[in-house]
Image: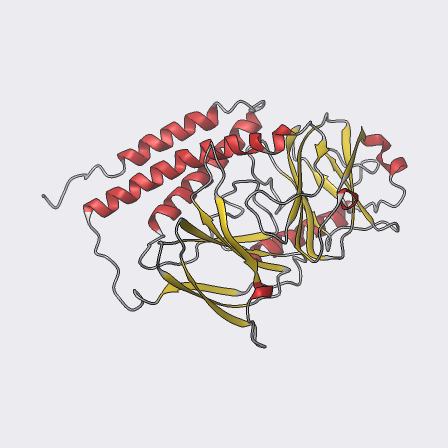
Length: 387
């Protein structure tokens, strides 16, 4: 073949991007131009993820990749978590090494298959670092032989206190391929990678359009479920899910007992794209370390577009950032006991102007104090997340 001229390898990806753009541009929940622009930003993250998963992964030389972060949001991603994925090959032995950071939770999960528009992935194995032999210096190591059906190792490092908890270190390797050179590039190999990226891009958009319909949007609007096992999640985790619809002058008060029998507890609101909203420059999520707790042991959060305290923000305000509708989720992780309905949230939908009278212990913040909170969030995200 001539050394010049196009190989036409990217055409399949170009076609997939065009198809994905049509899906996003015509999403049924788009109401405003801001929604549409957010969709195009969401699309950029899906393209980024598809390329990363297709080109960075190598079954012969596994590594842990972070495909979900502030520039690539999906699956109602948790603002408090760093996600790592590694593809697996059945029957192969893997060695996972690390040094435990100070995050509230570090968990490992092996998934069979993948999430799709018609089904959820199957959890084959799930545990947290309490089951590991962690040395005094925080280091650990374990081996895993990929069982039949095993496709992906997912690692979640979850932070309760953004200001003080630090990341750890994680690696994965195959002893049988370590020290050997990577495969030479071939036209066929690159063609397959572009095809994988194309399928992943369109598939991920179909998946996350459909997924919340199985769970969040099956529930009545402005309700949250009792704490329950997270679909495809860990044994030591529980979640409460729902979705909201609020007028500009309305607020939702979410009341939930602070749980001291878990290392991590948090609430977040998301968009109709089933993705986190801007948690870096807005307060759209709070952990129990970040939230105020009332004297009765209950955390009371206010979800609204407008500041709820006579025009002033409050400590436990969750901004809807222009989203009249969206998804919601509360999480408890590294639980030491099971949860009951009494541990779960209750909801009131009220006028924003009525919030101060209903919440006598709310903590109003000045504009400067709230700006300082946002600055702290920005610094924490910058320190913790690597895109």
